[in-house]
Image (cartoon, rainbow, N blue to C red; front, side, top):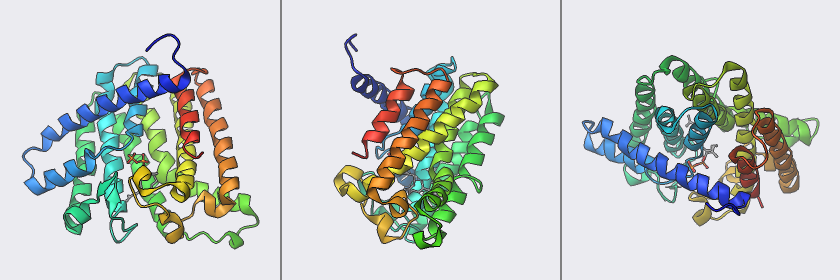
Length: 304
Ligand code: GRG
């Protein structure tokens, strides 16, 4: 990377290096389940190795480095969070939830095999994530963070709300109140894993406990921003670009920021969330020109 590299090139280079590291780490991690039944292994591999942006594990790696650690200490929590995220996608795509045929640009697990295989492959990814984490020298703290983020007071709780709360904007005093209710769901369903990614990296890297809270705060704002832009591109994106079926949120009456605020209002809210995330990075001592700040603009730009 030359000295003249701009923020966009710098971030692209960092994302590319992160992606390579995540892909090879995930691939290696599947060797640990080589004695599992063939079809289960194949379904786990199909879901896990189908690409994806790998943002959560890349955040683990970044925060471990910021905290003073190296890639080796970040590897297990990075793999674990991507396994948990992938399990959630496999289950979310099932007919009893979002009923999707396409994920990461390829057929969903229940389409390629069947529903039972998809349920069990998801279960296997979730349990294997914690089996790996248990081998880390900071296992107790890491398991606590990931379990809370992914369980009933985190992602699973958020998914329940997402499935059961059909947003009726007329039931709120104003659009802002509706948007706040939507963001409560987003905080659990999506931001919980982003908070956890930053915190896992921080712990694995040996960071101090005072700035651990600041790392969480950044992850929270980034996660809400990510979901805000996800709501927007679900309306504007194509199946090819998204790797999944667009327009599902409206079809399924999901509580989205677009449903609460309209497109322009959701764009404005995304901008405000980007400001919050940038301020959280600065509070952590991560200034303009760092990956943490560049990533905020990168996510915001998805919506334009
Ligand atoms: C089934 C317990 C359970 C939870 C499901 C993650 C989730 C909760 C549902 C998936 C649907 C959805 C829109 C979730 C919000 C989070 C989100 C935008 C996930 C997609 O994450 P990306 O874009 O996916 O990082 P890739 O494929 O890039 O990893």
